[in-house]
Length: 114
Image (cartoon, rainbow, N blue to C red):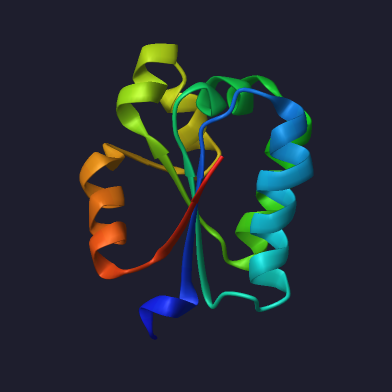
């Protein structure tokens, strides 16, 4: 698969409306409608806390996973908020994402940050 077919959405906002009206909508539709072949959502920063507390966002995340979106979260951030275990229970890969995101950028993946 060519790198120009890979998109990474980095979600950092703790604002639910931003999550629903932009991040989740675009991420899900990107995979579902075939806009990108490979789609990854990275939960980073305040978004980790919001996701751990919000059932509607958690349910939406299940839809993304069912469509084949790869789910990752920053371990450093989720540890700071005390939510790493909760995110792992949602079947999110919790890892230190600094090097991972650096690799995505060096590979030439398309990266959106919200």
